Length: 438
Image (cartoon, rainbow, N blue to C red; front, side, top):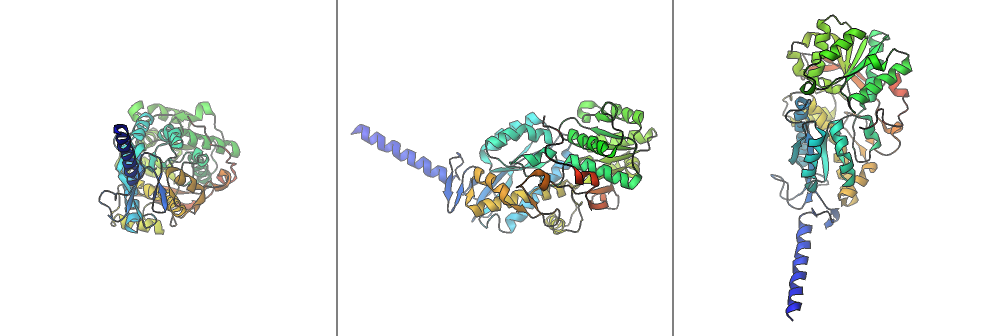
């Protein structure tokens, strides 16, 4: 009889544990039913902190470069733009009229460092449904196997060409590879066909993807590009100290066009020092190379004279419903730079996927992952609608625009050439990443 009593107590404890797990949104990963929607990790029946008491909460993670990495000046506004985006979603009724979204609780600083990124991901992974932001190509690649293992989908703050081939990644806009092709197609149209082109870039999958686009463009167009002389790797100043070696190689080769894929500080130093020593060629930058604060630097005259950058969508102040919504969310006050614009636009795919998962009645991680190929993303005019089903050669975004530094523009840049697809980017057969991961 004493044994029977003990067994009843154990059964009661086990039942209570199961009930508590279900009430917590299934955070142990077993899955549970919340009404007619199945949930597991990262969804709670408790409201979001400071949120609507009548709604459940979806927790999303953010891994960004917030303090000391080379992209912190862009990453902080990127994160602010995403906070504003999800606040608007919550204010308009949330996801499916039932869930609010929280990204603040599990925002962490990856310092644009792959090891730090993985460590911070492991810290927040047990509590999140998905990643609203995973910043940087090398950090995101370091975390990618872990995302797949746990059915975590992620919106990258990155444009590596390989994202098109990863089913847990919700990329938006072109790739660094097609960015470079479009930039050089535009430079040819604007300044005449170059005799020599050069790629100056970070090593790895950001800079390497851009350099691969330069090499492909040169091959297709019969323009001189010798890897030994014209493919120039550099690193952030935190590691390199300065960009003198890159500048020396530019001056020695004297190319007509230099495609730059670095951080903003490094781009400014390269352009400023090269111009000061007599270089008269043109610089075309990848979109992460620009920060309007550079217009107050010593390099500003050279940047205005010699540099344009490629962009995947219009800058702050563009005439689309998406831009109007983000300006309204910011209270009409311009943010520090277009990182805010990036963060806002990068958020549309995850919103679409979460809404579809709720419609499907499956807001588990596996259910969210399955919903990716079922959506058509509406970017409110900032980009054409996007799907994630089909072959990358058909679904990849090839269009770009050209922007220029502009003191009179709200965030220091304006559109020089509106959306276009250059002939090289249009014909490119996109059947694998332009540069392999790692």
